[in-house]
Length: 301
Image 1 (cartoon, rainbow, N blue to C red):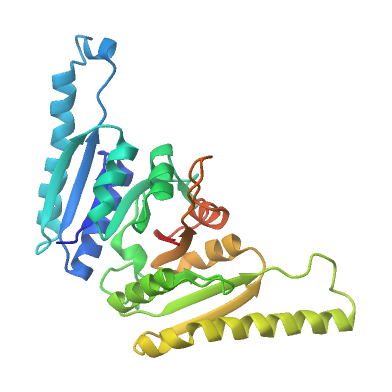
Image 2: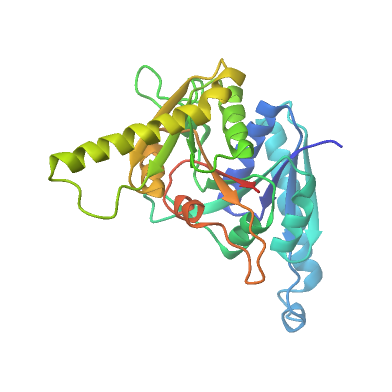
């Protein structure tokens, strides 16, 4: 079955930024790009309004994916772009259509102009329900944002990619998440920075020499666990430079701080099936609201 990159499109600036990112990713992977626009029919009383007839509303909404596809073909020659216009509830339709996709890309507004994502209800539902990797792209994201500055200190998409950043829990490292991060770094011919955050003991240990020694010992143990977890992956991807960082503190905070220098942030999301609903997970949820680079949320068992 032919795989493809899929992007949810609604005509907003954030979804247009997501489509541009998805087109660049499709070119890196050599895959076609499919734009999916979902039209949610208005309630019957509104459909009868003289200025908002159902046929007129649907006609205008159908122009969104068609116009976006034409623009993407012009800006990204060589990428096979198709557009699909579907009807239904956006969250349900996107999850269903994404089953055959290799990657799903969604747009999101930035928070207060300083970083992080405003993840809407549709985006949260899709991320929590799909088992396909989902990349969230902020409004205003540019290709140059993923690259290092040029020698003159000017943003440029012609320079090398910034590193890919992976948040890794060494207690339960998942191959699906790690492989995704290594593949993204390899495609970009850039390094992979792997960050492992651990929590120090919940009591005050900073003041007595023996407690300081205990802290140092814990730090060495966590660093060794990270090195061990990555050892087979270094052998599998010898061309990818791996930079390890094991630090005490909040994983979300550290990923947010390090995301300023990353082209892509990768985090895992454990698949949870519960009668009380679906959840993204605390770390992934916090990362989505605080990082400044595009974020890939990779579901795993």
